[in-house]
Image (cartoon, rainbow, N blue to C red; front, side, top):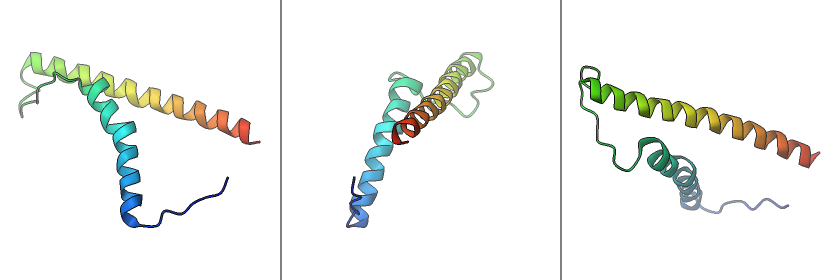
Length: 84
C-alpha cells in the first residue's frame, strides 16, 4: 500500500482535528460526561451532591481510558499477527 503525502498543512490539521473529534471529543461527550451534565462549581468538593456527580464522571473516565488501552493493545497485537 503506497503512502500518499498530505500536500498542505491545512489538510493535515483538518485530518488530525477530525480524528480527534471522532475518537476523543464525541465519545467523551456522549459516554463520559453525558448530555445532561451541568457544570461544576468551584467548591464542588464541599457539596455532597456535586461531589457524587464528580465521582461518577471520574469513574467513567477511568473506565474509558482503561478500556481504550485494552482495545488499543489488542488491536495492535492483532495487526502485528496479520502483518507477519
